[in-house]
Length: 544
Length: 85
Image (cartoon, rainbow over the protein chains, first blue to last red):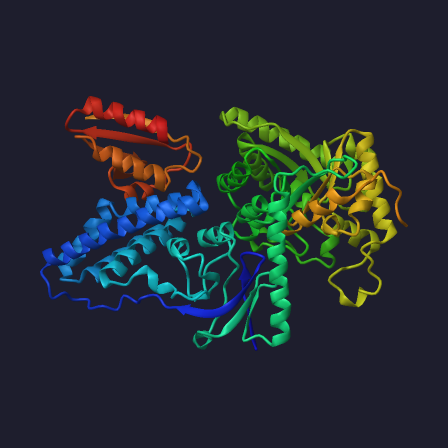
């Protein structure tokens, strides 16, 4: 058995033979034996054919992944009408007596390089599109069909890279999963894969001799097993059948209210760490996003992300959620999450160090850029802002004051924004003890149980030697949670839990009895949790 | 020659889709339409050149219309901007 790791796009299991797909290399003659006119006519015919294919892909994508995701293929069609692109191809054919294949791939490379050099991130990403359309035309010229990617047996597809068009045109009834060497988990292709619910790994250094071997993609653990041992295979098959049960559960729970048998209603939201996860949120029928970890925008970036960049991402999430609540946690960087350009000093004790709101309140411009972006996105749906790592009332007041400054700046610029609800993460013992005072300042609390547990028990969860001392159900932590919920309610705040404990099904009843209003968990935990909530009866005495 | 300026309100700026629609609209006119941002300019009919200008939201671009029925072409372009960019 061999194991390789990568980055998982979807928490799912795929089991089946691997099929390595090699793209047709455009290794054709450079010099043409035809006249330039004949060569250009070949190109033009291929171009028209490629546009027809793209038209077909657009319709297919429209069906499978919706209009927003399909628009890319409309743009590809338009690109193949571009005068400069056509002139460049013509120029190469005429001046170099080149083949259409050579002219198209060279033109594609040149245009891609020009886009890749642009300042704007959106424009830089268009380089891949130009390459994609050029490859399509070359494939038509070479007579390489799309169908060759898969034969008629179900398989896990393995490729260096997949373009959005390749992803969409794959035969979903045969595609068990896919593995690529390149590509990021935020790429268009990754988002499409998630929307289509296909287990996939990117960034896998695969070997050619894998072709035809039996493999398991374990999306939960970001790895692929090649020729797995029987024991593992059985375990994975079981996991996969659980996933299918989950899918069935979804169908049975979808659109049903989230109430206990005795009529108490609880909101179940999802946590996301990435704009691309929104698909999963909707798939699992969560009622909102209870924790949008905004730091991925900073961690994925080489420099401070601009207001516009952030705004676009937030807007996409907010629009996709279509009016359902989106709680955006402001930048929580520092400790184990570092971005080089922040130039944070190395600390003896990072968990107790310069992080989250402490950075935001001292690097005000960074904070304000983010707040303005969030405010602007609030014009497109229902947005709440949540400040992390709060220990005092003063911090909340300062943060709120900065938020007001941002609103004034936007008003001055004539930019629209909506009403935003303000809340804090309760994840320090200090915030718990100050919950009454803090509740006067905000509209909601969200309990971050991971940090709260670590700070309350003084246990570093990364340290395996402490496993014996660590108790996630420690009464001290549970009392903190209860105190926070009660204090919040005394002052009109709603209180939720967004840490890992929120998904702990053995505590669901306890939390409900404490009066929690919302639980925010990973998208995959939403449905099982809803099932439990719907089976509880709080009017009955507890069993213990 | 006729000229007018327009300030982009689309939050992404002139991205691929509006650039493509603009190219289509400009091709339908009997005038030549040039877009200028700062020192760079591009023919409105050229999708990738227009994208290459990298026009962001809030930035102002100048439309120059030459030849044919300039009056009607300028009106059509202005209308297009308001509806799409």
